[in-house]
Image (cartoon, rainbow, N blue to C red; front, side):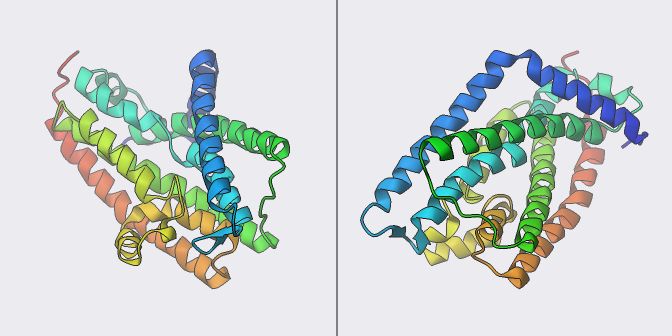
Amino acid sequence: MQTCSASKYWVIFKIGWQQELEYRFNFFLGRLRNIIVMLLLYFVWLTLTSVSGRFAGYTRSELITYVFGINVLRSVVFGAQTKLVASEINEGAFSKYLTMPVSHFMRTFSVELAQRSLYGATSLLEVLIFSYLLRVELVFPRNLMILTLSITSVALASLLYFLMSYAMSLVAFWSREAMGPRFLFDWFVEFASGAYFPLDILSPALFEALGFLPFASIIFLPMQIYLGRIGPSGALQAILLQVGWVILLSPAVLSVWKRGLRKYTGEGM
């Protein structure tokens, strides 16, 4: 992969931000979808905790905070830019990036970072508005250390997802049907990461099985740290696990990239 000064990626970041704001209707439709999902999950957990105020070891406040929290995390962690890589490879549009004096990986990350920052800020505003309108009682970190660990974990989760998603799109180097596996990948990641419910409400066997995969480190673990359900030592172990997955996946993605370039023919140009 080519290298370049950081200033070029800052320009790419700003262009990515501007492009997101150009398509305002698509942007608002996407945010409306997230709000609907958030409210549906809110009323589901509100109903399930209506009798005892608890469910599967969680208090109502913790579950509602989880719902509102994943609305922000989904926007910050899950990006759409890497999904375009597969179609660019299949259509031959990928060739133009090979002539640019920038790393394709870093260019894609810069554009996705712009998208995530915009969506993250919007989702946080949504949470503030609806938590006020619905008069919900949210759980906040007990101290600054927990908040710092939470933010660190979210940053690592964002990088971890990007590596996996980018690698998944590189399958297009070998197959023109890459969008099918990508759809299954996105669906499975959302389920296995805890993007709809806390993973530990599942059966112990299934929860342990998912714990061996990197997906739980994307949503579930950052939210567990934020809610204070694991102590500082457990939070550090979770962060080290995320770092381990990033270290493990980084050379693997580079290897797939290099092998894919040898297969790339520019078909579709």
